[in-house]
Amino acid sequence: MKIGAPKETYDGENRVAMTPESAIQIQKLGHDCVIEAGAGAQAGFSDKDYKEAGVEVVKTAVALWKAADVVVKVRQPDVTETRRMREGQTLISFFNPAANDKMMESAAKKGTNVIAMEMVPRISRAQKMDALSSMANIAGYRAVIEAGNNFGRFFTGQVTAAGKVPPAKVLVIGAGVAGLAAIGTATSLGAITYAFDVRPEVAEQIESMGAEFVFLEFEESSQDSAATGGYAAPSSPEFREKQLEKFREMAPDIDIAICTALIPNREAPELWTEDMVAAMKPGSVIVDLAAEKGGNCKLTVMDQKIVTDNGVTIVGYTDFPSRMGAQASTLYSNNIRHMLTDLTPEKDGVIQHDMEDDVIRGATVTYDKEVTYPPPPPKVAAIAAAPKKEKPKELTAEEKRAQEVAEFKQQTKTQVTLIAVGAAVLLAVGLAAPASFMQHFIVFVLAVFVGFQVIWGVAHSLHTPLMAVTNAISSIIILGALTQIWSGSGLVILLAALSVFMTGINIFGGFLVTRRMLAMFQKS
Image (spheres, rainbow, N blue to C red):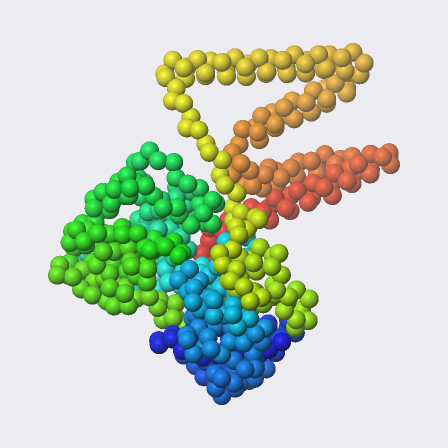
Protein backbone atom coordinates (compact mmCIF):
# COMPACT_ATOMS: atom_id res chain seq x y z
CA MET A 1 0.00 0.00 0.00
CA LYS A 2 1.06 3.61 -0.44
CA ILE A 3 1.81 5.58 2.73
CA GLY A 4 1.59 9.32 2.06
CA ALA A 5 2.53 12.41 4.08
CA PRO A 6 1.09 15.77 2.96
CA LYS A 7 2.52 19.16 3.80
CA GLU A 8 1.02 20.48 7.02
CA THR A 9 -1.50 23.26 6.40
CA TYR A 10 -1.57 24.66 9.94
CA ASP A 11 0.13 28.05 10.03
CA GLY A 12 3.57 27.83 11.68
CA GLU A 13 3.68 24.03 11.84
CA ASN A 14 7.22 22.89 11.05
CA ARG A 15 6.84 19.16 11.69
CA VAL A 16 6.33 16.42 9.12
CA ALA A 17 4.91 12.95 9.75
CA MET A 18 7.45 11.10 7.59
CA THR A 19 11.23 11.58 7.51
CA PRO A 20 13.60 9.96 5.00
CA GLU A 21 14.83 7.59 7.72
CA SER A 22 11.31 6.51 8.76
CA ALA A 23 10.38 6.08 5.09
CA ILE A 24 13.19 3.54 4.68
CA GLN A 25 11.84 1.57 7.64
CA ILE A 26 8.25 1.78 6.33
CA GLN A 27 9.37 0.39 2.97
CA LYS A 28 10.83 -2.63 4.77
CA LEU A 29 7.24 -3.42 5.81
CA GLY A 30 6.36 -3.86 2.14
CA HIS A 31 4.78 -0.42 1.64
CA ASP A 32 5.54 2.32 -0.88
CA CYS A 33 6.01 5.89 0.35
CA VAL A 34 4.84 9.13 -1.21
CA ILE A 35 5.20 12.70 0.04
CA GLU A 36 4.05 16.14 -1.06
CA ALA A 37 6.80 18.39 -2.42
CA GLY A 38 8.21 20.66 0.29
CA ALA A 39 6.49 18.78 3.15
CA GLY A 40 9.73 18.32 5.08
CA ALA A 41 11.43 21.60 4.21
CA GLN A 42 10.61 23.35 7.51
CA ALA A 43 12.01 20.39 9.44
CA GLY A 44 15.23 20.37 7.45
CA PHE A 45 14.43 17.49 5.04
CA SER A 46 14.66 18.32 1.33
CA ASP A 47 12.80 16.61 -1.52
CA LYS A 48 16.18 15.28 -2.65
CA ASP A 49 16.61 13.50 0.71
CA TYR A 50 13.26 11.80 0.23
CA LYS A 51 14.01 10.75 -3.35
CA GLU A 52 17.31 9.21 -2.21
CA ALA A 53 15.33 7.24 0.38
CA GLY A 54 13.09 5.84 -2.36
CA VAL A 55 10.10 8.08 -1.67
CA GLU A 56 7.92 9.31 -4.53
CA VAL A 57 7.51 13.10 -4.43
CA VAL A 58 4.23 14.51 -5.82
CA LYS A 59 3.65 18.17 -6.53
CA THR A 60 0.27 18.85 -4.91
CA ALA A 61 -1.76 17.88 -1.87
CA VAL A 62 -4.62 16.76 -4.15
CA ALA A 63 -2.33 14.28 -5.87
CA LEU A 64 -1.02 13.06 -2.51
CA TRP A 65 -4.46 12.38 -1.03
CA LYS A 66 -5.52 10.67 -4.23
CA ALA A 67 -2.47 8.42 -4.39
CA ALA A 68 -2.12 7.41 -0.72
CA ASP A 69 -3.95 4.46 0.81
CA VAL A 70 -2.75 5.56 4.26
CA VAL A 71 -2.28 9.28 5.00
CA VAL A 72 -0.01 10.19 7.92
CA LYS A 73 -0.19 13.70 9.36
CA VAL A 74 0.79 15.71 12.42
CA ARG A 75 -2.13 18.10 12.95
CA GLN A 76 -5.78 17.16 12.64
CA PRO A 77 -7.07 17.63 9.07
CA ASP A 78 -8.72 20.90 8.15
CA VAL A 79 -12.04 21.20 6.30
CA THR A 80 -10.42 20.96 2.86
CA GLU A 81 -8.44 17.87 3.80
CA THR A 82 -11.57 16.26 5.26
CA ARG A 83 -13.26 16.60 1.88
CA ARG A 84 -10.35 14.72 0.26
CA MET A 85 -10.85 11.63 2.43
CA ARG A 86 -12.28 8.62 0.67
CA GLU A 87 -13.72 5.22 1.46
CA GLY A 88 -11.18 2.57 2.45
CA GLN A 89 -8.50 5.14 3.18
CA THR A 90 -6.78 5.25 6.58
CA LEU A 91 -5.73 8.47 8.32
CA ILE A 92 -3.15 8.44 11.13
CA SER A 93 -2.66 11.78 12.90
CA PHE A 94 -3.52 13.82 15.94
CA PHE A 95 -7.29 14.24 15.72
CA ASN A 96 -8.64 15.71 19.01
CA PRO A 97 -11.66 13.35 19.00
CA ALA A 98 -13.12 14.71 22.26
CA ALA A 99 -13.82 18.07 20.60
CA ASN A 100 -14.16 16.95 17.00
CA ASP A 101 -17.55 15.25 16.71
CA LYS A 102 -18.46 16.69 13.29
CA MET A 103 -15.16 15.66 11.69
CA MET A 104 -15.42 12.16 13.18
CA GLU A 105 -18.93 11.76 11.81
CA SER A 106 -17.80 13.08 8.42
CA ALA A 107 -14.89 10.61 8.30
CA ALA A 108 -17.15 7.73 9.34
CA LYS A 109 -19.70 8.66 6.70
CA LYS A 110 -17.00 8.69 4.01
CA GLY A 111 -15.71 5.30 5.17
CA THR A 112 -12.27 6.57 6.23
CA ASN A 113 -10.63 4.73 9.12
CA VAL A 114 -9.09 7.26 11.51
CA ILE A 115 -6.36 6.47 14.04
CA ALA A 116 -5.83 9.30 16.55
CA MET A 117 -2.25 9.29 17.85
CA GLU A 118 -3.22 11.03 21.10
CA MET A 119 -5.53 8.08 21.89
CA VAL A 120 -2.75 5.47 22.00
CA PRO A 121 -3.28 3.73 25.36
CA ARG A 122 -0.54 4.08 27.94
CA ILE A 123 0.47 0.44 28.25
CA SER A 124 4.03 -0.89 28.09
CA ARG A 125 3.70 -2.35 24.60
CA ALA A 126 2.46 0.95 23.19
CA GLN A 127 5.24 3.19 24.54
CA LYS A 128 6.98 3.20 21.15
CA MET A 129 3.81 4.71 19.61
CA ASP A 130 3.06 7.21 22.39
CA ALA A 131 3.23 10.44 20.40
CA LEU A 132 1.88 12.51 23.30
CA SER A 133 4.87 11.50 25.39
CA SER A 134 7.29 12.14 22.52
CA MET A 135 6.01 15.64 21.99
CA ALA A 136 5.66 16.35 25.72
CA ASN A 137 9.30 15.39 26.19
CA ILE A 138 10.32 18.03 23.63
CA ALA A 139 7.91 20.59 25.09
CA GLY A 140 9.35 20.16 28.60
CA TYR A 141 12.91 20.62 27.36
CA ARG A 142 12.01 23.59 25.16
CA ALA A 143 10.04 25.25 27.99
CA VAL A 144 13.19 25.52 30.10
CA ILE A 145 15.19 26.82 27.12
CA GLU A 146 12.46 29.40 26.45
CA ALA A 147 12.46 30.38 30.13
CA GLY A 148 16.24 30.82 30.03
CA ASN A 149 15.89 32.99 26.94
CA ASN A 150 13.57 35.34 28.84
CA PHE A 151 15.36 35.15 32.19
CA GLY A 152 17.91 37.84 32.98
CA ARG A 153 20.43 35.68 34.85
CA PHE A 154 22.38 32.46 34.73
CA PHE A 155 20.68 29.26 35.86
CA THR A 156 23.72 28.11 37.76
CA GLY A 157 25.17 30.06 40.66
CA GLN A 158 28.59 31.63 40.17
CA VAL A 159 31.16 33.40 42.30
CA THR A 160 33.37 35.59 40.12
CA ALA A 161 35.73 38.51 40.58
CA ALA A 162 32.96 40.72 39.22
CA GLY A 163 30.45 39.57 41.83
CA LYS A 164 28.29 36.72 43.03
CA VAL A 165 25.42 35.33 40.94
CA PRO A 166 22.82 33.32 42.88
CA PRO A 167 21.41 30.17 41.24
CA ALA A 168 17.96 30.35 39.68
CA LYS A 169 15.12 28.66 41.54
CA VAL A 170 12.83 26.69 39.24
CA LEU A 171 9.46 25.20 40.20
CA VAL A 172 7.98 22.54 37.90
CA ILE A 173 4.28 21.93 38.47
CA GLY A 174 3.34 18.46 37.27
CA ALA A 175 5.84 15.63 36.91
CA GLY A 176 4.53 13.87 33.84
CA VAL A 177 6.68 13.39 30.76
CA ALA A 178 6.94 17.15 30.09
CA GLY A 179 7.57 17.89 33.75
CA LEU A 180 10.34 15.31 34.08
CA ALA A 181 11.98 16.62 30.88
CA ALA A 182 11.85 20.15 32.33
CA ILE A 183 13.31 18.93 35.64
CA GLY A 184 16.18 17.19 33.88
CA THR A 185 16.97 20.24 31.76
CA ALA A 186 16.76 22.73 34.66
CA THR A 187 18.97 20.65 36.96
CA SER A 188 21.53 20.04 34.21
CA LEU A 189 21.73 23.80 33.70
CA GLY A 190 22.55 24.23 37.40
CA ALA A 191 19.26 25.60 38.74
CA ILE A 192 17.86 24.74 42.16
CA THR A 193 14.81 22.78 41.05
CA TYR A 194 11.61 22.05 42.94
CA ALA A 195 8.79 19.92 41.58
CA PHE A 196 5.23 19.21 42.65
CA ASP A 197 2.76 16.54 41.61
CA VAL A 198 -0.45 15.22 43.13
CA ARG A 199 0.77 11.63 42.54
CA PRO A 200 3.02 10.67 45.47
CA GLU A 201 4.50 7.73 43.51
CA VAL A 202 6.50 10.14 41.29
CA ALA A 203 8.41 11.60 44.26
CA GLU A 204 11.25 9.11 43.78
CA GLN A 205 11.52 9.95 40.07
CA ILE A 206 11.72 13.65 40.90
CA GLU A 207 14.40 13.19 43.53
CA SER A 208 16.41 10.79 41.35
CA MET A 209 16.76 13.60 38.79
CA GLY A 210 18.22 15.99 41.35
CA ALA A 211 15.10 18.01 42.14
CA GLU A 212 13.37 18.47 45.48
CA PHE A 213 9.85 17.10 45.76
CA VAL A 214 7.45 19.66 47.22
CA PHE A 215 5.64 17.66 49.87
CA LEU A 216 2.12 18.67 50.81
CA GLU A 217 0.87 17.94 54.32
CA PHE A 218 -2.64 16.72 53.60
CA GLU A 219 -4.60 13.69 54.75
CA GLU A 220 -6.12 12.54 51.46
CA SER A 221 -5.65 9.19 49.80
CA SER A 222 -4.45 10.01 46.29
CA GLN A 223 -5.81 7.82 43.51
CA ASP A 224 -3.16 5.56 42.01
CA SER A 225 -2.21 6.72 38.51
CA ALA A 226 -2.55 3.15 37.23
CA ALA A 227 -6.30 3.61 37.51
CA THR A 228 -6.23 6.76 35.37
CA GLY A 229 -4.00 5.63 32.52
CA GLY A 230 -0.85 7.08 34.04
CA TYR A 231 -2.33 10.58 34.45
CA ALA A 232 -3.11 12.46 37.62
CA ALA A 233 -6.67 12.25 38.86
CA PRO A 234 -8.65 15.44 39.62
CA SER A 235 -8.15 16.59 43.20
CA SER A 236 -10.73 17.53 45.81
CA PRO A 237 -11.45 21.23 46.51
CA GLU A 238 -9.83 20.88 49.94
CA PHE A 239 -6.66 19.46 48.45
CA ARG A 240 -6.60 22.21 45.81
CA GLU A 241 -6.83 24.92 48.47
CA LYS A 242 -3.93 23.37 50.37
CA GLN A 243 -2.00 23.17 47.12
CA LEU A 244 -2.57 26.84 46.29
CA GLU A 245 -1.58 27.79 49.82
CA LYS A 246 1.76 26.02 49.32
CA PHE A 247 2.34 27.75 45.98
CA ARG A 248 1.57 31.17 47.52
CA GLU A 249 4.19 30.47 50.14
CA MET A 250 6.78 29.58 47.48
CA ALA A 251 5.95 32.25 44.85
CA PRO A 252 8.15 35.10 46.23
CA ASP A 253 11.27 32.89 46.06
CA ILE A 254 10.66 31.24 42.68
CA ASP A 255 12.42 32.71 39.64
CA ILE A 256 10.95 30.40 36.99
CA ALA A 257 7.69 28.44 37.09
CA ILE A 258 7.10 25.71 34.48
CA CYS A 259 3.40 24.73 34.46
CA THR A 260 2.73 21.31 32.88
CA ALA A 261 -0.42 20.13 34.68
CA LEU A 262 -2.80 18.94 31.97
CA ILE A 263 -5.03 15.88 31.55
CA PRO A 264 -6.09 15.01 27.97
CA ASN A 265 -9.63 16.00 27.02
CA ARG A 266 -9.99 18.25 30.10
CA GLU A 267 -9.59 21.96 30.75
CA ALA A 268 -6.32 22.86 32.44
CA PRO A 269 -6.63 23.39 36.22
CA GLU A 270 -5.78 26.87 37.47
CA LEU A 271 -2.77 26.42 39.76
CA TRP A 272 -0.84 29.71 39.52
CA THR A 273 -3.21 32.51 40.43
CA GLU A 274 -3.01 36.25 39.82
CA ASP A 275 -1.86 37.00 43.37
CA MET A 276 0.98 34.47 42.99
CA VAL A 277 2.15 36.27 39.86
CA ALA A 278 2.01 39.57 41.74
CA ALA A 279 4.15 38.06 44.54
CA MET A 280 6.95 37.00 42.16
CA LYS A 281 10.09 39.10 41.74
CA PRO A 282 10.51 41.36 38.68
CA GLY A 283 12.28 39.46 35.92
CA SER A 284 10.70 36.13 36.87
CA VAL A 285 9.34 33.88 34.12
CA ILE A 286 6.30 31.61 33.86
CA VAL A 287 6.11 29.10 30.99
CA ASP A 288 2.61 27.62 30.71
CA LEU A 289 2.55 24.38 28.72
CA ALA A 290 -1.19 24.06 29.36
CA ALA A 291 -2.00 27.29 27.49
CA GLU A 292 -3.89 25.41 24.74
CA LYS A 293 -6.47 24.23 27.30
CA GLY A 294 -6.84 27.52 29.19
CA GLY A 295 -3.55 27.49 31.04
CA ASN A 296 -2.44 26.69 34.59
CA CYS A 297 -1.76 30.40 35.13
CA LYS A 298 -4.67 32.81 35.38
CA LEU A 299 -2.96 35.45 33.22
CA THR A 300 -1.69 33.20 30.41
CA VAL A 301 -2.58 34.34 26.89
CA MET A 302 -2.57 31.50 24.36
CA ASP A 303 0.21 31.71 21.73
CA GLN A 304 1.54 34.97 23.18
CA LYS A 305 4.25 36.21 25.50
CA ILE A 306 3.18 38.96 27.88
CA VAL A 307 4.89 40.97 30.61
CA THR A 308 2.85 41.87 33.69
CA ASP A 309 2.89 45.22 35.49
CA ASN A 310 5.36 43.87 38.07
CA GLY A 311 7.76 42.64 35.38
CA VAL A 312 6.90 38.92 35.24
CA THR A 313 7.11 37.36 31.77
CA ILE A 314 4.38 34.79 30.99
CA VAL A 315 4.98 32.56 27.95
CA GLY A 316 1.85 30.90 26.55
CA TYR A 317 3.20 29.37 23.34
CA THR A 318 1.52 26.14 22.21
CA ASP A 319 3.98 25.17 19.48
CA PHE A 320 7.06 24.12 21.48
CA PRO A 321 7.53 20.81 19.59
CA SER A 322 7.17 22.65 16.28
CA ARG A 323 9.93 25.05 17.34
CA MET A 324 12.24 22.04 17.25
CA GLY A 325 10.95 20.75 13.91
CA ALA A 326 13.76 18.34 13.03
CA GLN A 327 13.84 16.60 16.42
CA ALA A 328 10.05 16.53 16.78
CA SER A 329 9.59 15.13 13.27
CA THR A 330 12.14 12.40 13.92
CA LEU A 331 10.40 11.24 17.10
CA TYR A 332 6.86 11.57 15.75
CA SER A 333 7.68 9.78 12.49
CA ASN A 334 9.10 6.92 14.57
CA ASN A 335 5.81 6.75 16.49
CA ILE A 336 3.96 6.58 13.17
CA ARG A 337 6.34 3.94 11.84
CA HIS A 338 5.80 1.73 14.90
CA MET A 339 2.03 2.09 14.50
CA LEU A 340 2.35 0.96 10.88
CA THR A 341 4.47 -1.98 12.06
CA ASP A 342 1.58 -3.15 14.26
CA LEU A 343 -0.85 -2.57 11.38
CA THR A 344 1.35 -4.69 9.07
CA PRO A 345 2.13 -7.80 11.16
CA GLU A 346 3.15 -9.92 8.16
CA LYS A 347 5.42 -7.18 6.71
CA ASP A 348 3.81 -7.83 3.34
CA GLY A 349 2.53 -4.33 2.63
CA VAL A 350 -1.04 -5.21 3.63
CA ILE A 351 -2.79 -3.27 6.40
CA GLN A 352 -4.62 -5.47 8.93
CA HIS A 353 -6.79 -3.26 11.15
CA ASP A 354 -7.18 -5.65 14.10
CA MET A 355 -9.86 -4.22 16.38
CA GLU A 356 -9.10 -6.94 18.95
CA ASP A 357 -5.66 -5.43 19.51
CA ASP A 358 -5.64 -3.15 22.59
CA VAL A 359 -3.41 -0.52 21.00
CA ILE A 360 -5.09 -0.33 17.59
CA ARG A 361 -8.58 -0.43 19.08
CA GLY A 362 -7.74 2.24 21.64
CA ALA A 363 -6.37 4.62 19.01
CA THR A 364 -9.11 4.04 16.42
CA VAL A 365 -11.86 6.68 16.46
CA THR A 366 -13.67 5.71 13.23
CA TYR A 367 -13.72 2.28 11.56
CA ASP A 368 -15.88 0.61 8.94
CA LYS A 369 -18.19 3.64 8.62
CA GLU A 370 -18.79 3.83 12.38
CA VAL A 371 -17.58 6.18 15.11
CA THR A 372 -15.70 3.99 17.61
CA TYR A 373 -14.78 6.75 20.08
CA PRO A 374 -14.54 6.52 23.06
CA PRO A 375 -12.72 3.18 23.19
CA PRO A 376 -13.16 0.58 25.94
CA PRO A 377 -10.43 0.45 28.60
CA PRO A 378 -7.46 -1.72 27.59
CA LYS A 379 -7.40 -5.30 28.85
CA VAL A 380 -3.92 -4.72 30.26
CA ALA A 381 -3.32 -1.79 32.65
CA ALA A 382 -0.43 0.60 32.06
CA ILE A 383 1.06 -0.30 35.42
CA ALA A 384 -0.16 -2.50 38.19
CA ALA A 385 -2.04 -0.53 40.79
CA ALA A 386 0.04 -0.27 43.93
CA PRO A 387 -1.52 -2.04 46.88
CA LYS A 388 -2.68 0.26 49.60
CA LYS A 389 -0.10 0.31 52.36
CA GLU A 390 -1.20 0.75 55.91
CA LYS A 391 0.83 3.25 57.89
CA PRO A 392 2.99 1.43 60.44
CA LYS A 393 1.86 1.92 64.00
CA GLU A 394 4.05 4.26 66.01
CA LEU A 395 5.53 2.31 68.92
CA THR A 396 6.08 3.79 72.34
CA ALA A 397 9.52 3.67 73.98
CA GLU A 398 8.41 0.74 76.18
CA GLU A 399 7.05 -1.17 73.18
CA LYS A 400 10.26 -0.61 71.20
CA ARG A 401 12.32 -1.86 74.16
CA ALA A 402 10.12 -4.93 74.54
CA GLN A 403 10.40 -5.62 70.78
CA GLU A 404 14.20 -5.36 70.90
CA VAL A 405 14.38 -7.72 73.89
CA ALA A 406 12.13 -10.25 72.15
CA GLU A 407 14.23 -10.10 68.97
CA PHE A 408 17.44 -10.53 70.98
CA LYS A 409 16.02 -13.56 72.82
CA GLN A 410 14.92 -15.13 69.52
CA GLN A 411 18.35 -14.57 67.93
CA THR A 412 20.09 -16.00 71.02
CA LYS A 413 17.82 -19.05 70.99
CA THR A 414 18.52 -19.64 67.29
CA GLN A 415 22.28 -19.30 67.70
CA VAL A 416 22.41 -21.60 70.77
CA THR A 417 20.36 -24.20 68.90
CA LEU A 418 22.67 -24.05 65.87
CA ILE A 419 25.80 -24.34 68.07
CA ALA A 420 24.33 -27.30 69.95
CA VAL A 421 23.41 -29.07 66.71
CA GLY A 422 26.86 -28.32 65.25
CA ALA A 423 28.62 -29.61 68.37
CA ALA A 424 26.55 -32.80 68.29
CA VAL A 425 27.44 -33.35 64.61
CA LEU A 426 31.15 -32.75 65.29
CA LEU A 427 31.04 -35.18 68.21
CA ALA A 428 29.36 -37.84 66.09
CA VAL A 429 31.94 -37.40 63.31
CA GLY A 430 34.79 -37.43 65.84
CA LEU A 431 33.71 -40.79 67.24
CA ALA A 432 34.16 -42.41 63.84
CA ALA A 433 36.85 -40.34 62.07
CA PRO A 434 40.64 -40.45 62.76
CA ALA A 435 42.30 -37.60 64.71
CA SER A 436 44.20 -36.29 61.64
CA PHE A 437 40.93 -35.87 59.74
CA MET A 438 39.24 -34.10 62.63
CA GLN A 439 41.94 -31.41 62.83
CA HIS A 440 41.36 -30.40 59.21
CA PHE A 441 37.59 -30.84 59.48
CA ILE A 442 37.28 -28.52 62.49
CA VAL A 443 39.36 -25.84 60.72
CA PHE A 444 37.10 -26.23 57.68
CA VAL A 445 33.91 -25.90 59.72
CA LEU A 446 35.19 -22.84 61.56
CA ALA A 447 36.26 -21.23 58.28
CA VAL A 448 32.79 -21.79 56.79
CA PHE A 449 31.09 -20.45 59.93
CA VAL A 450 33.25 -17.32 60.20
CA GLY A 451 33.04 -16.66 56.45
CA PHE A 452 29.25 -17.01 56.53
CA GLN A 453 28.92 -14.62 59.47
CA VAL A 454 31.22 -12.04 57.85
CA ILE A 455 29.65 -12.11 54.38
CA TRP A 456 26.03 -12.38 55.59
CA GLY A 457 26.34 -9.18 57.61
CA VAL A 458 27.55 -7.12 54.65
CA ALA A 459 25.09 -4.80 52.88
CA HIS A 460 24.09 -5.91 49.37
CA SER A 461 25.55 -2.77 47.82
CA LEU A 462 29.00 -3.79 49.13
CA HIS A 463 28.97 -7.38 47.90
CA THR A 464 30.67 -6.63 44.58
CA PRO A 465 33.75 -4.79 45.96
CA LEU A 466 33.98 -7.25 48.86
CA MET A 467 33.88 -10.31 46.62
CA ALA A 468 36.35 -8.69 44.20
CA VAL A 469 38.94 -8.47 46.99
CA THR A 470 38.20 -11.80 48.71
CA ASN A 471 38.38 -13.66 45.39
CA ALA A 472 41.77 -12.11 44.76
CA ILE A 473 42.95 -13.22 48.20
CA SER A 474 41.91 -16.79 47.41
CA SER A 475 45.29 -17.34 45.72
CA ILE A 476 46.28 -19.07 48.97
CA ILE A 477 44.26 -22.03 47.70
CA ILE A 478 46.57 -22.33 44.70
CA LEU A 479 49.55 -22.75 47.01
CA GLY A 480 47.83 -25.64 48.75
CA ALA A 481 46.88 -27.22 45.43
CA LEU A 482 50.42 -26.89 44.07
CA THR A 483 51.84 -28.75 47.05
CA GLN A 484 49.54 -31.68 46.25
CA ILE A 485 49.72 -31.71 42.48
CA TRP A 486 52.94 -33.76 42.48
CA SER A 487 51.58 -36.51 44.74
CA GLY A 488 51.41 -40.02 43.38
CA SER A 489 47.61 -40.37 43.57
CA GLY A 490 45.77 -39.70 40.32
CA LEU A 491 42.61 -38.56 42.16
CA VAL A 492 44.60 -36.06 44.23
CA ILE A 493 46.32 -34.72 41.10
CA LEU A 494 42.93 -34.28 39.38
CA LEU A 495 41.41 -32.47 42.37
CA ALA A 496 44.50 -30.26 42.72
CA ALA A 497 44.39 -29.35 39.03
CA LEU A 498 40.70 -28.45 39.29
CA SER A 499 41.46 -26.31 42.34
CA VAL A 500 44.17 -24.43 40.44
CA PHE A 501 41.85 -23.88 37.46
CA MET A 502 38.82 -22.65 39.43
CA THR A 503 40.84 -20.52 41.81
CA GLY A 504 42.66 -18.96 38.87
CA ILE A 505 39.28 -17.83 37.52
CA ASN A 506 38.48 -16.33 40.94
CA ILE A 507 41.79 -14.49 41.13
CA PHE A 508 41.78 -12.99 37.64
CA GLY A 509 38.04 -12.28 37.85
CA GLY A 510 38.47 -10.57 41.20
CA PHE A 511 41.19 -8.28 39.97
CA LEU A 512 39.25 -7.57 36.75
CA VAL A 513 36.11 -6.60 38.69
CA THR A 514 38.17 -4.41 41.03
CA ARG A 515 39.83 -2.69 38.07
CA ARG A 516 36.49 -2.01 36.39
CA MET A 517 35.06 -0.61 39.60
CA LEU A 518 38.02 1.73 40.04
CA ALA A 519 37.66 2.84 36.40
CA MET A 520 34.10 4.01 37.15
CA PHE A 521 35.52 6.69 39.43
CA GLN A 522 38.21 7.88 37.02
CA LYS A 523 37.77 10.73 34.57
CA SER A 524 37.79 9.59 30.95
